[in-house]
Image (cartoon, rainbow, N blue to C red; front, side, top):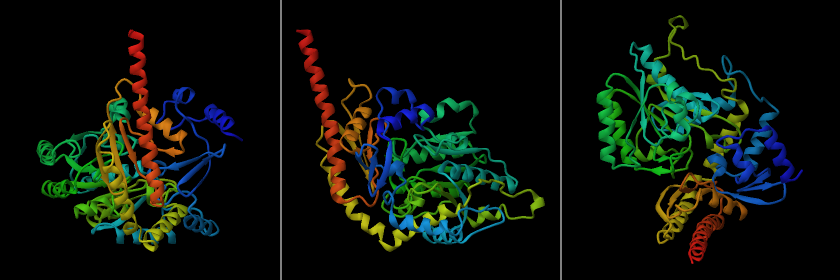
Length: 445
């Protein structure tokens, strides 16, 4: 099998996510991947690609990591899955204990699911029902403008990226968006949040945020001080704080969890993506004892939380997650990453003089910047994507925002390559503009 035949078979049967399928027939590359090793992916024609986005932010320790793979192989011979209603298993129990120990104080209970959107749905439902179980009906949620929390219906409702949400507006639950501290001064954002809490007093059950980085919203970033102040507002108005750490958890912002930098504990924390090192779908919702107690009753009282997923607490996924946590502990990853964070910071500063780059920003192992001055080129982000792929690098711009979210196993030399090839792609666009301008001048003459 080669790339061409694999692509033909794919397009015959598969509807890809986050895609306009017609693009694949015209100008969007479709790369068949045969294998992966370390920070590289390999196609069927033996081309390799440096994975600078951790394959949608999940493969934090690269591909075919031997330690995680060996843990999965060992688990395969023991137990692959068991119903999680009325049953349990050692990998889930061990993982739960470790997550509670690692997470901010007060998050003592865990509810498992199998993907990030489901984790958000669970937190939303659990927040609403916990109030309902105590005699209050609070039908509203507040999130931040420019936020993204997933693409199931509840998660879409509290998100604010129109590309995903707008088509479904008529059938979504009630949600209100406050100004984002990533887009406005922090005091204005907090004032707007207070305004909404006053207007909706007694009707809001939870505020949900992406701590520090609004990832799908163009990697928009804000300071931890906002989260600290928001925790105070939630306490003042008696509403829950949901921290959606699906993308930013597990070391991505420089600490194990982003909320640590604000020195606060949310009422719910949603985890997924890097939790299994990119090996298997798994998510977890961590919650407080107070919320847990709202559901603790005799079955006949009707206050149980009856959310269920067939693969809840999947044994193999939990084994992969435990192996992932082993690597964090055994290799002191949070400390080890500081050298790479510093390198990414230095390389980012070198971009400040580039006339087509602006808004350079960083939180830990995430660097992003915006490209400007390409108004005469249709979809400049696609040009960059195609160029870097043709030079063996996988970077996937978000609109006019270019970002790096590499695996933690990427070497310093590979990080330098990531920056160099991406800047070459932007410079190539500049050349394209210059050529177009010269051609236009010649046509006028």
